[in-house]
Length: 168
Image 1 (tube, rainbow, N blue to C red):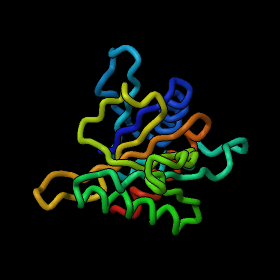
Image 2: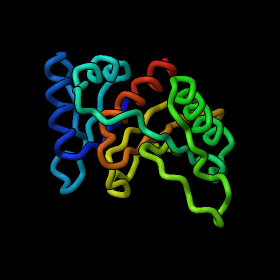
Image 3: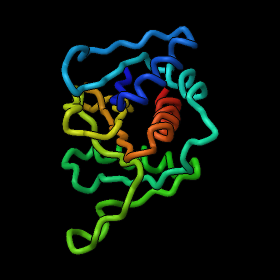
Image 4: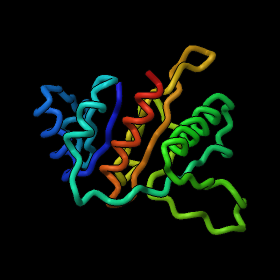
């Protein structure tokens, strides 16, 4: 399952794109004020994303990765692997952990970080996608989150499609 947290404007576009492709999206938190989460099956992003393309979509985003602060080695490696994958596709990836607390953190348009099995979407006011990228050695899923800053919702779903295709 892929979970997508979207602003109201993007939620409408995503639902319309999915409907035009015959894909059914679910909203496990329907009726909860302020929370807009859609879920779809793995593979559906590759069909939905091309239907969202528009000429006025923003340029390629700067991607920030935050992995050094993750205690779990496997999850830390999964976040670093996703950042490396996005770099291989021509994206600029910034190390948000570099320089410690003394340096001002770099500005990223999309952040790659550790996801959780049941994300608290209210913690992220920005659109976000949680993607399963493998299995933990203890059997649980390794989930990575991509979170977009304002104006980078379209880029977020395109990046999620790349990660999903690589994980398949």
